Image (tube, rainbow, N blue to C red):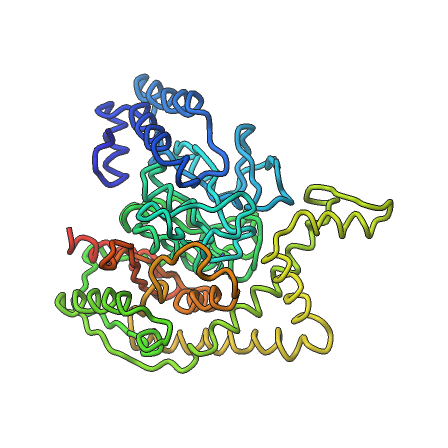
Length: 479
Ligand code: GLN
């Protein structure tokens, strides 16, 4: 049994010897035995005896009086697109084209976890190349929602969210290009943060849309996310887009009273908004008001354009990033005829799934001469306008509140026939990526049938710690 404690307190117990790391690990593997065959959260997993040996090694170091890190013995899962150099684990990005790939190096985020003595136990399932909102686009079978296995866990970090929701890991790294940490966190009833763009290194993250991609954290609570962000955030010379600006520190006395919160009408009145999700958001708004915050509804007309802007930019960047998977530089090599063209074409035809091919083709189109200005150029300008409008909005408000996703977890197959209906589920999450701002999803009131619903808070750039502190206060209110 693992005591029900914040991670920092659990690590103290491990350090004092009261709860051996080996016991924590064996409980986590009991849960894996119980859930994994039905839910398929993991793409590859450390054999139990190796995981236990690594935990025992932490216990031995503690017994000899050596100092151990802030995540000593904590079992962590890593999304399949973040590189882990371990002969027991593979990184496939949910794609056939990387089947069997072993990374020769660790991502910086992984290095930082290991430096604090976390134990990486497995690689989690995801939509292929992080393209999707349900984990149905993984080339390696779907992951199921633990609250109801007939429903999707969200995506693209579906495996990460399920690993934390079921206790098959105590902390997970995911990635968020347009909502992929927050939306699965919301669908599985856990907490997920996409930090300010550039504050966690992307070195070793297999790119989807580089100007939008951000490694994020999933955990049970905002407090646990805060510990992980403390460890992960900070400049990395290996990533040229890594931020050099330091995060704004929060006063110890962060409080809800006096906060000015904006609730965009376009979220609340969206045609696609499920009434139970609306209720959940309104409940958190009431909680904030009762604690002395002001919550003001405001129309933000630019929200009408977030989905087209995001998808044009994401497809364009993806089509360029995925050019490296050609069967020569990266990717499984397949060839029909004896020609270079056949090698490229066959490797990609066999290696990529339908959604990835669709996005590469559309991305190539919006970047092609004649259309570049009309689509990519304009989307870039619109993004800049959104960035400056959001910045101005944050002169007046401290937070933007909304649903994480307009709908609760949907059923398998419900949105796969028409990709546009799937894209529309990103309505509330993409703005944070387009404007480089931090955003967190915390569990709100579930639906009547017991499905989780997430509520999102967006904060100012580099004020991640304040956002996490506010989310912790809100989570403290209902416990
Ligand atoms: N659902 C969005 C997409 O398919 C976001 C994915 C993500 O954040 N990786 O692009």
